[in-house]
Length: 273
Image 1: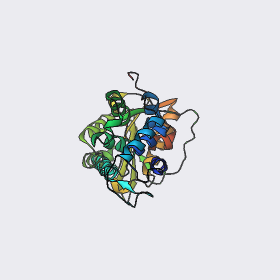
Image 2: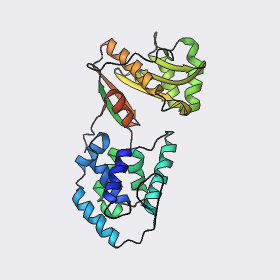
Image 3: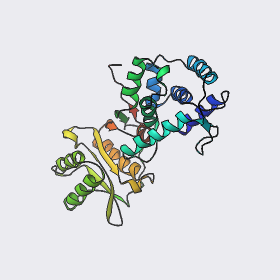
Image 4: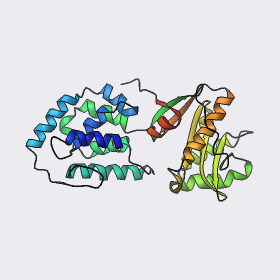
Protein backbone atom coordinates (compact mmCIF):
# COMPACT_ATOMS: atom_id res chain seq x y z
CA UNK A 1 0.00 0.00 0.00
CA UNK A 2 2.87 2.40 0.73
CA UNK A 3 4.24 1.73 -2.73
CA UNK A 4 0.81 2.32 -4.28
CA UNK A 5 0.47 5.63 -2.44
CA UNK A 6 3.96 6.72 -3.52
CA UNK A 7 3.28 5.83 -7.15
CA UNK A 8 -0.10 7.59 -7.02
CA UNK A 9 1.63 10.73 -5.72
CA UNK A 10 4.11 10.52 -8.60
CA UNK A 11 1.18 10.31 -11.03
CA UNK A 12 -0.41 13.36 -9.40
CA UNK A 13 2.69 15.56 -9.70
CA UNK A 14 1.68 17.13 -13.00
CA UNK A 15 -1.92 17.70 -11.86
CA UNK A 16 -0.86 18.93 -8.40
CA UNK A 17 -3.86 17.18 -6.78
CA UNK A 18 -4.14 13.47 -6.09
CA UNK A 19 -7.39 12.02 -7.44
CA UNK A 20 -8.93 8.51 -7.44
CA UNK A 21 -7.77 7.94 -11.03
CA UNK A 22 -4.15 8.26 -9.81
CA UNK A 23 -4.81 5.52 -7.25
CA UNK A 24 -6.24 3.29 -9.99
CA UNK A 25 -3.19 3.89 -12.19
CA UNK A 26 -0.87 3.07 -9.28
CA UNK A 27 -2.78 -0.17 -8.65
CA UNK A 28 -2.38 -1.19 -12.29
CA UNK A 29 1.37 -0.51 -12.09
CA UNK A 30 1.70 -2.97 -9.22
CA UNK A 31 2.75 -6.35 -10.65
CA UNK A 32 2.55 -8.49 -7.51
CA UNK A 33 -0.30 -10.49 -6.00
CA UNK A 34 -3.88 -9.79 -6.99
CA UNK A 35 -3.04 -6.46 -8.58
CA UNK A 36 -0.66 -8.19 -10.94
CA UNK A 37 -3.44 -10.54 -12.02
CA UNK A 38 -5.87 -7.64 -12.46
CA UNK A 39 -3.42 -5.65 -14.58
CA UNK A 40 -3.15 -8.65 -16.91
CA UNK A 41 -6.87 -9.39 -17.09
CA UNK A 42 -8.20 -5.85 -17.48
CA UNK A 43 -7.88 -4.06 -20.81
CA UNK A 44 -7.19 -0.76 -19.07
CA UNK A 45 -4.17 1.10 -20.45
CA UNK A 46 -2.16 3.31 -18.11
CA UNK A 47 -1.34 5.78 -20.91
CA UNK A 48 -5.03 6.21 -21.73
CA UNK A 49 -5.92 6.66 -18.08
CA UNK A 50 -3.25 9.32 -17.72
CA UNK A 51 -4.76 11.25 -20.61
CA UNK A 52 -8.22 10.94 -19.10
CA UNK A 53 -6.89 12.09 -15.73
CA UNK A 54 -5.38 15.24 -17.29
CA UNK A 55 -8.62 16.04 -19.09
CA UNK A 56 -10.54 15.46 -15.91
CA UNK A 57 -8.38 17.92 -14.00
CA UNK A 58 -8.93 20.64 -16.58
CA UNK A 59 -12.67 20.40 -16.04
CA UNK A 60 -12.57 19.67 -12.35
CA UNK A 61 -13.60 21.99 -9.55
CA UNK A 62 -12.93 19.39 -6.87
CA UNK A 63 -11.76 20.94 -3.61
CA UNK A 64 -8.49 19.61 -2.24
CA UNK A 65 -6.56 19.79 0.98
CA UNK A 66 -3.34 18.61 2.56
CA UNK A 67 -3.55 15.28 4.39
CA UNK A 68 -1.02 13.81 6.84
CA UNK A 69 -0.99 10.53 4.92
CA UNK A 70 0.12 12.15 1.67
CA UNK A 71 2.89 14.45 0.44
CA UNK A 72 0.60 16.18 -2.08
CA UNK A 73 -2.87 17.73 -1.74
CA UNK A 74 -5.68 15.22 -2.17
CA UNK A 75 -9.19 15.63 -3.54
CA UNK A 76 -12.33 15.13 -1.48
CA UNK A 77 -12.99 11.96 -3.48
CA UNK A 78 -9.66 10.50 -2.35
CA UNK A 79 -10.53 11.31 1.26
CA UNK A 80 -13.86 9.54 0.74
CA UNK A 81 -12.14 6.51 -0.76
CA UNK A 82 -9.80 6.07 2.19
CA UNK A 83 -12.62 6.57 4.68
CA UNK A 84 -14.51 3.77 2.92
CA UNK A 85 -11.38 1.60 2.78
CA UNK A 86 -10.92 2.02 6.55
CA UNK A 87 -14.52 0.93 7.13
CA UNK A 88 -13.90 -2.12 4.96
CA UNK A 89 -10.75 -2.91 6.95
CA UNK A 90 -12.66 -2.75 10.24
CA UNK A 91 -15.48 -4.91 8.87
CA UNK A 92 -12.91 -7.64 8.18
CA UNK A 93 -11.45 -7.19 11.68
CA UNK A 94 -8.07 -6.23 10.23
CA UNK A 95 -5.59 -3.58 11.31
CA UNK A 96 -4.08 -2.31 8.04
CA UNK A 97 -5.72 -0.95 4.91
CA UNK A 98 -4.61 -3.18 2.05
CA UNK A 99 -5.05 -3.16 -1.72
CA UNK A 100 -8.28 -5.16 -1.49
CA UNK A 101 -9.86 -2.57 0.77
CA UNK A 102 -8.70 0.20 -1.57
CA UNK A 103 -10.11 -1.46 -4.69
CA UNK A 104 -13.43 -2.13 -3.01
CA UNK A 105 -13.62 1.49 -1.86
CA UNK A 106 -12.82 2.78 -5.36
CA UNK A 107 -15.71 0.70 -6.71
CA UNK A 108 -18.31 1.26 -3.98
CA UNK A 109 -17.81 5.05 -3.94
CA UNK A 110 -18.20 5.05 -7.76
CA UNK A 111 -15.50 7.72 -8.10
CA UNK A 112 -13.79 5.87 -10.98
CA UNK A 113 -16.92 4.62 -12.76
CA UNK A 114 -16.31 6.92 -15.73
CA UNK A 115 -13.00 5.16 -16.44
CA UNK A 116 -14.25 1.56 -16.21
CA UNK A 117 -16.36 -0.68 -18.39
CA UNK A 118 -18.79 -3.10 -16.75
CA UNK A 119 -16.39 -5.92 -17.59
CA UNK A 120 -13.52 -4.09 -15.88
CA UNK A 121 -15.64 -3.64 -12.76
CA UNK A 122 -16.56 -7.32 -12.77
CA UNK A 123 -12.93 -8.40 -13.06
CA UNK A 124 -11.74 -6.06 -10.31
CA UNK A 125 -14.61 -7.07 -8.01
CA UNK A 126 -14.03 -10.80 -8.47
CA UNK A 127 -10.24 -10.81 -8.49
CA UNK A 128 -9.36 -7.99 -6.16
CA UNK A 129 -11.99 -7.65 -3.45
CA UNK A 130 -12.73 -11.21 -2.35
CA UNK A 131 -10.73 -13.75 -0.37
CA UNK A 132 -8.63 -16.01 -2.57
CA UNK A 133 -7.00 -19.40 -2.24
CA UNK A 134 -3.20 -19.40 -2.33
CA UNK A 135 -0.55 -22.09 -2.61
CA UNK A 136 2.85 -22.26 -0.93
CA UNK A 137 5.67 -24.51 -2.10
CA UNK A 138 7.14 -26.18 0.98
CA UNK A 139 9.91 -28.22 -0.63
CA UNK A 140 12.60 -25.56 -0.74
CA UNK A 141 11.41 -23.23 2.03
CA UNK A 142 13.40 -23.24 5.28
CA UNK A 143 11.13 -22.26 8.13
CA UNK A 144 12.68 -20.39 11.08
CA UNK A 145 12.74 -22.17 14.43
CA UNK A 146 11.99 -19.07 16.52
CA UNK A 147 8.77 -18.95 18.50
CA UNK A 148 8.99 -22.17 20.47
CA UNK A 149 8.55 -20.18 23.68
CA UNK A 150 5.00 -19.07 22.86
CA UNK A 151 3.75 -21.54 20.20
CA UNK A 152 2.81 -25.12 20.99
CA UNK A 153 0.51 -27.91 19.84
CA UNK A 154 -2.86 -28.11 21.61
CA UNK A 155 -3.81 -30.79 24.10
CA UNK A 156 -7.23 -31.85 25.32
CA UNK A 157 -7.08 -29.34 28.18
CA UNK A 158 -7.04 -26.52 25.63
CA UNK A 159 -10.36 -27.52 24.06
CA UNK A 160 -12.74 -25.20 25.91
CA UNK A 161 -10.46 -22.18 26.19
CA UNK A 162 -9.51 -22.31 22.50
CA UNK A 163 -13.10 -22.59 21.31
CA UNK A 164 -14.12 -19.69 23.57
CA UNK A 165 -11.25 -17.61 22.19
CA UNK A 166 -12.22 -18.34 18.58
CA UNK A 167 -15.93 -17.65 19.10
CA UNK A 168 -15.19 -14.39 20.92
CA UNK A 169 -12.66 -13.09 18.38
CA UNK A 170 -13.63 -14.73 15.10
CA UNK A 171 -16.61 -16.93 14.22
CA UNK A 172 -18.69 -19.95 15.19
CA UNK A 173 -17.79 -21.50 11.81
CA UNK A 174 -14.11 -21.50 12.71
CA UNK A 175 -14.98 -22.85 16.14
CA UNK A 176 -16.82 -25.78 14.55
CA UNK A 177 -13.86 -26.47 12.26
CA UNK A 178 -11.56 -26.70 15.27
CA UNK A 179 -14.05 -28.96 17.07
CA UNK A 180 -13.75 -31.32 14.15
CA UNK A 181 -9.97 -31.04 14.35
CA UNK A 182 -9.98 -32.12 18.00
CA UNK A 183 -11.52 -35.45 16.96
CA UNK A 184 -8.12 -36.55 15.64
CA UNK A 185 -5.77 -38.52 17.90
CA UNK A 186 -3.15 -35.79 17.50
CA UNK A 187 -4.95 -32.58 16.45
CA UNK A 188 -2.91 -30.55 13.97
CA UNK A 189 -3.76 -27.34 15.82
CA UNK A 190 -1.28 -24.93 17.35
CA UNK A 191 -1.81 -22.06 19.77
CA UNK A 192 0.21 -19.03 20.79
CA UNK A 193 0.12 -18.34 24.53
CA UNK A 194 1.20 -15.24 26.47
CA UNK A 195 0.74 -14.79 30.22
CA UNK A 196 -1.18 -18.10 30.22
CA UNK A 197 -3.76 -16.67 27.80
CA UNK A 198 -4.36 -17.81 24.22
CA UNK A 199 -3.55 -14.97 21.83
CA UNK A 200 -3.65 -16.84 18.54
CA UNK A 201 -4.10 -20.18 16.80
CA UNK A 202 -3.46 -21.93 13.52
CA UNK A 203 -4.37 -25.34 12.12
CA UNK A 204 -4.03 -27.55 9.08
CA UNK A 205 -5.81 -30.65 7.76
CA UNK A 206 -8.88 -29.75 9.85
CA UNK A 207 -11.16 -28.01 7.35
CA UNK A 208 -13.59 -30.66 6.12
CA UNK A 209 -10.79 -33.20 6.46
CA UNK A 210 -8.91 -31.79 3.48
CA UNK A 211 -5.25 -32.74 3.36
CA UNK A 212 -2.52 -30.17 2.56
CA UNK A 213 -5.00 -27.45 3.57
CA UNK A 214 -3.76 -24.74 5.94
CA UNK A 215 -6.23 -22.78 8.03
CA UNK A 216 -8.00 -21.34 9.74
CA UNK A 217 -5.60 -19.04 11.54
CA UNK A 218 -6.27 -16.03 13.74
CA UNK A 219 -4.53 -13.72 16.20
CA UNK A 220 -6.29 -11.45 18.70
CA UNK A 221 -6.47 -7.90 17.41
CA UNK A 222 -4.29 -6.44 20.18
CA UNK A 223 -1.50 -8.89 19.34
CA UNK A 224 -1.31 -8.41 15.59
CA UNK A 225 1.70 -6.92 13.76
CA UNK A 226 3.92 -8.49 16.43
CA UNK A 227 4.91 -11.55 14.41
CA UNK A 228 2.59 -13.98 16.20
CA UNK A 229 0.78 -14.95 13.01
CA UNK A 230 4.07 -15.63 11.23
CA UNK A 231 5.23 -17.89 14.06
CA UNK A 232 1.98 -19.88 13.96
CA UNK A 233 2.05 -20.13 10.18
CA UNK A 234 5.66 -21.32 10.08
CA UNK A 235 5.05 -23.89 12.81
CA UNK A 236 2.21 -25.44 10.83
CA UNK A 237 3.97 -25.29 7.47
CA UNK A 238 7.13 -26.80 8.96
CA UNK A 239 5.15 -29.76 10.25
CA UNK A 240 3.34 -30.13 6.92
CA UNK A 241 6.73 -30.27 5.20
CA UNK A 242 7.98 -32.87 7.69
CA UNK A 243 4.89 -34.99 7.00
CA UNK A 244 5.87 -35.00 3.35
CA UNK A 245 3.57 -32.40 1.83
CA UNK A 246 5.17 -30.60 -1.10
CA UNK A 247 2.58 -27.82 -1.16
CA UNK A 248 0.18 -26.15 1.25
CA UNK A 249 -3.13 -24.72 0.12
CA UNK A 250 -4.10 -21.60 2.07
CA UNK A 251 -7.86 -21.35 1.82
CA UNK A 252 -9.67 -18.03 1.61
CA UNK A 253 -6.57 -15.97 2.39
CA UNK A 254 -7.64 -12.48 3.42
CA UNK A 255 -4.34 -10.57 3.86
CA UNK A 256 -2.77 -11.72 0.58
CA UNK A 257 0.37 -9.66 1.13
CA UNK A 258 0.99 -11.36 4.52
CA UNK A 259 1.24 -14.82 2.97
CA UNK A 260 3.27 -13.55 0.02
CA UNK A 261 5.88 -12.23 2.43
CA UNK A 262 5.72 -14.91 5.13
CA UNK A 263 5.92 -18.04 2.97
CA UNK A 264 6.19 -16.90 -0.67
CA UNK A 265 2.64 -18.08 -1.37
CA UNK A 266 1.01 -17.17 -4.67
CA UNK A 267 -2.62 -16.65 -5.61
CA UNK A 268 -4.33 -19.54 -7.40
CA UNK A 269 -5.86 -18.10 -10.60
CA UNK A 270 -9.60 -18.16 -11.29
CA UNK A 271 -9.95 -20.09 -14.54
CA UNK A 272 -13.23 -18.42 -15.47
CA UNK A 273 -11.42 -15.14 -16.22
